Image 1 (tube, rainbow, N blue to C red):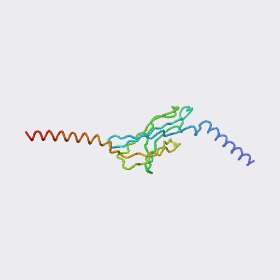
Image 2: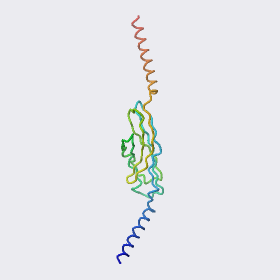
Image 3: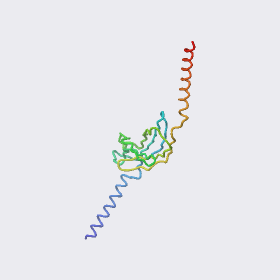
Image 4: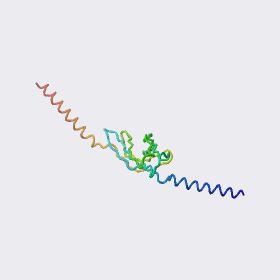
Length: 163
């Protein structure tokens, strides 16, 4: 009699697991980093991380379909970019958004990885993306304009002094 109860409980657990997986297939949900792009603003380097969240066949609220934050790995230093999504992602079939991160002035060529983190599920790491340091070619126009301005000011001062 004890073996029959154990068998019944075991079968009930197996069936409930199968039903839960069919109702809410975890493998169908994805928090994916699509790309990591970078651009300079002044001397600061900004990362633009594109994220896609897909939950096919979402029916109402599902706590597993919420992207909470993005983690970035900068040469082994993992940082969290929190609260990236402020909407309920369960209402969408597919959701695309971008997260920006200011790395400041970069020296060397750091390697960047990123992944999207849900409140339960964790996406795969995307990368590596090697980010170049601030190129000096961006300083060339600034130096040229400054040099021309200094030469013009100097010539005007010299012309006034000679009179």
